[in-house]
Length: 442
Image (cartoon, rainbow, N blue to C red; front, side, top):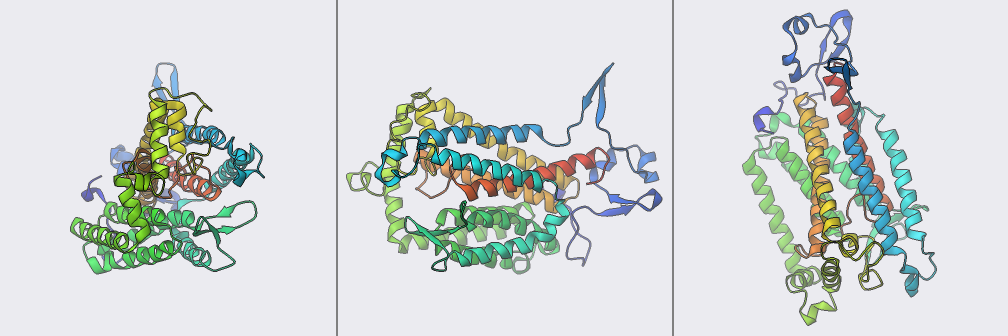
């Protein structure tokens, strides 16, 4: 996507709608887009509403059905969910042998994981019925709700502390993690922000500074939990959306340097994170192997045992109380041990395809003059791509250890719900794109 292809607002308007409307015959109104230049001149000049075509002629006596949504996208998401469900069961089936989990049944985690998937799919089904124009209006209120929840989680007797981190709000059936909602919220807010600030893209203070303050405020709240991993993902989403929205590249690199400098200062003055960096650089050092590098060394052992085809489903040794958090942050290590290089490669290819597809849907929306929808879809692509990359890198020992789960696959209720909510909104973007390209209404 080139910056010259980005649609611009009219002078002095300050914002644009998701799809500009033009009058049609009979007083109707509908969106107009760049794809209309491919229509016959008679249709373009008449302003007639094009019929919605559900089938096209592919050859003599044969037709091809035009799908109303991206079925391949749904299939890949379901495949990742299914593999995650199987691997969560494999990684947790032996946990009751540990005194810490002796009160749990062997199927406790997989049952709850299946429940979260069911709730997430139900939420996704409802979400796809909500038009993108509604989501654009809700962008700022959703962002405000995310900030309120991030504040509440820090309040004693509201936020729940697990492993010295206060990241969850107990809601009975699940412990909700506000940072997961914040990822959806920042994607919406950043897309909406760029639509509203389109005329100010070349002005640093007008285009970047307000968004920078919002990300900085979120960062302060997340680091109080602490949750450095979520902050990195949220900063990536925000900065990537600004860049894709057309912010001057020099401004983008200045902000990137500021963020890198901030992370460096945090590491320099935080003993815990500094030790993690040193342990990551030399995990087999006896000073770290039984301490900060304990998870990493056992993750590497798991990958080494897996070789090409793995030890077989359910045959992992590292999940037997050697590898901590095997069902959340280090689920990929269990996949590597049981399914080998082939299983890990399949997961990587799945996330690569998913990320690329989200960007393609976003590009299609922008080509149809639906800027908010396009930027939101690409922001979700940045989220899934960045978080999957970080999680895979941590498991393989090429990145320092972070508390980030593998999207759609790792155990966790709020993460699964927010993952499926975000993807359902992108599916809605795709459905509206297809409707417009078939001559219907977005």
